Length: 301
Figure (tube, rainbow, N blue to C red):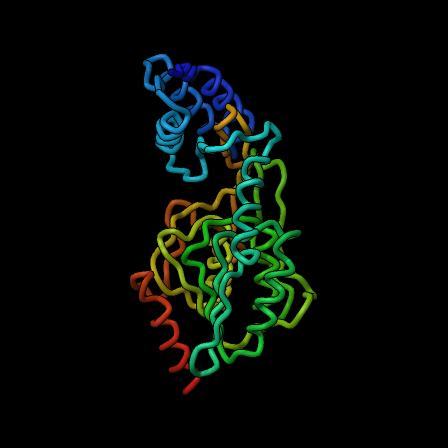
């Protein structure tokens, strides 16, 4: 017979609240959320039987003030290391190794139209540069390109810029990250040179989206849509535009907290809360067929 020790929520809540006030991109919201967490703890709202249950309860409260979907207390089945961001990196590496490096499908459709699926993430560039170069170079000779982001849940902004570089002709300002308190900003540009061959900036480009498309994948779609480079087809995306870091607050729990916000150079805003709105809206399951039809029509014209 085994006995289990009831989870003590107070240390998790105290550390999560501290991290919020120290790191969250919006300091005023951070104070509100931290106060909410402490009040809910005092009310007994976090008397959970497991770390997984506590993660769900806390995440709901973290997101209740301003709807920031990057604010989470993530549960990990396996124990996570204490180093900042290590839990997320370990999970990413497992996905990377089982998804051909994040480019699980390159396909040629009728009419010389290529499909490149990027999923389940846009992995850190030091890992992803080689598979992305292979996939996008292979598709570069196609007459039109369909980029499938329907199952992509986010990733590395540097990888977004790398992918955009294959789909543009000239070095282009893509995005600006504004960090907490306006102390520092960082611009993201496409690269002047890429390994392999570019698809380029003139042939038809379509991006498939779904309600599951999130974070860095949304940036990839939004950047190219707002530049007038791509037509987005499918469903509105989830709406998360804030880059975040992760901190281990319990052997099985990681607090993910946004530390900046995206500012698009064309719109002056981003897709936070609204999602990327498709140019052609349809169910995600129909988006590939719709894009293929549109591409064939455009090429025929």
